Image (tube, rainbow, N blue to C red; front, side, top):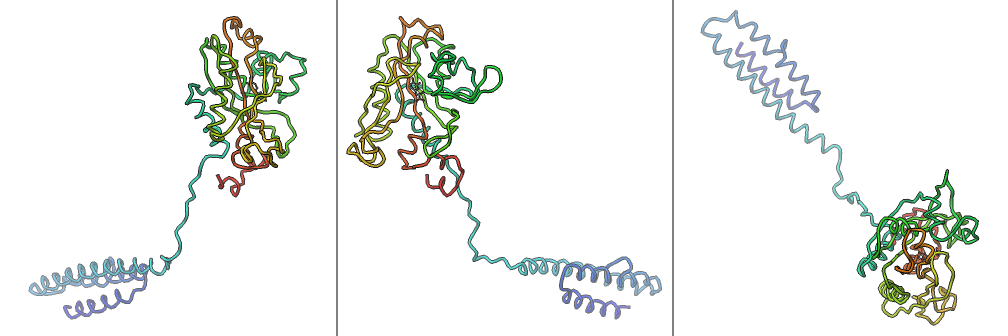
Length: 335
Ligand code: DAH
């Protein structure tokens, strides 16, 4: 019987070495160590042995069992790594690239504008894109049926609601809630039913500003916008105010900066004029103060509003507003 065990030892070692995969090893385990396997068979026959022989054979059989178990485990490990090798991981392949995202150029421009006004004492306020007709028109001195509604016409929703056509609505909200002194800018998205082309979009972004206190003058407006223009477009930039009309300001002006491309000499971008229009502004109309319950004899103020896309197009040299909204990464990755 001892002879038989020695033979099993040799056989089992050979079978373990020969196994090519984990399934093959399992077969070997069952054949030798299984409940009906070779070793169990020998153990079953031990009762026929003499009293002297039985403990010796028993000991040997147990040793062999442990030895086969250990060898099976060892072989399983080498087969394990062997399997990984056959997957053929090519360590010379380039790794997977994860591109870092960044802020949209419109967001970057808006944040730059915000930062400049924050530095001169303005705070940032936001308001809802769905507004009331009162906040968007009536309180801003644009009564129903007044022709100047056309210039800011918008998308109407149910009842008195609409999509705001400018962020001036936030000026009204602020003045209704607080008393002067007030100094705030209002960045946000606005809507107008303009036909889309290279310079128009039904949706765009604005930053508006408002300052109200006793004795605020047009000179304060000029000072604030001069600082803005120089910080945004460069210290050599000059600013010019042209008389204009807005319902919510009196007097009103359109504001130009000296062309950032030709520095005022005249080029294609400024249409040979040397100036680029960047925003509208003026002294707050007394009618607006009345609408929010301020006494126009006590308070004066200024307001202004600019299109963020227009500014972004100027500083980045983009000639079509639609590029900002098409989500084409080949465009957006350039900023
Ligand atoms: N809403 C004007 C525009 O779209 C810009 C503007 C002008 C805004 C004067 C104002 C303002 O708040 O007071 O051109």
